[in-house]
Amino acid sequence: NSISVFAPATVANVACGFDIFGFAVANPGDKITLTVRDEPGVRITDIIGDEGRLPRETARNTAGIAIQTYLHHIGRTDVGLDVVLHKQMPLGSGLGSSAASAVAGVFAINELLGRPLPTMKLLPFAMEGERLACGSAHADNVAPSLLGGFVVIRSYHPLDVIRIDTPAILFCTLVHPDIEVNTKDARFILKNEVSLKNTIIQMGNVAGLIAGLMKPDYDLISRSLVDVIIEPVRSILIPEFNEAKQAALDNGALGCSISGSGPSMFALSRDAQTAERVGAAMQQAFLSVGVTSEAYVSEI
Ligand code: HSE
Image (cartoon, rainbow, N blue to C red; front, top):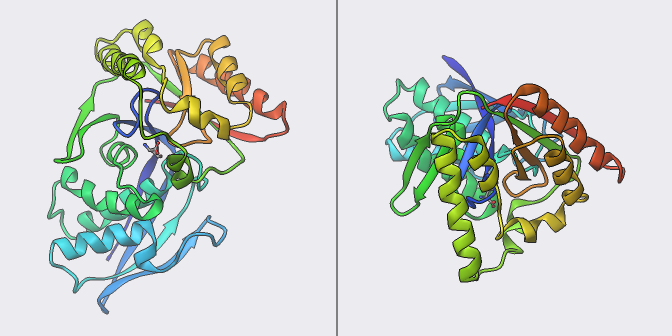
């Protein structure tokens, strides 16, 4: 009795929506395989593709803790599982790597047990994986990885998650420079206070982005992909951030910002050719300072 599940990478924040916006991409992503065994307890038997860097201990692994919390909640601690995790995306990349593993794990166990909980109710367990990974149970990676599409976290207490329609044609370029930024560190450097002036600008862009996606109105999306609060602080952690962003905009992207806590950057475009060109231009900007990168283009 065994199941394999894929969960996609995600772009959290989406410029103006720190901790409240996120969307899923088609690739990369993580795969998990669960196999039932007689002896109760969740055991991580193998992790492939992490170069030995992720904890093998169940309670310290994002997928492990998500599955364990779920089993505890539904009163099935009698279940025995062997877990094999296939990491198919870089760690510390801002692509929601810890989230994808947790989502794949909790989705897989719920399917394996005959779906006792509806998908939406799996969110809190995947969020426990995020709490473990970076000290904060934010949902802007796990929710879109679990539900697909573009997601708004309207509230955390109580959890209120809404899926938003996006234009039928919209492409995302992700560029991951080969450096690492730890989410915990990238949260630590943020200021606790925000000026009223910047709050007003950010609220305008949050409202504009949602309206632009739902109408849909590409120009409005483009005008709204602006972050005056988080990006100015975090962009210092990314070499050539300004150059890469400018390259994206010069090549026709609707907008460009940091993906999650970075160092990956995302750009949205109206068509596949633009998205590919934007990726190549951003990679070139990184390469100009000797930083290699991967680029991924997905329709969203
Ligand atoms: N909203 C989170 C942050 C996402 O920016 O810290 C982390 O991927």
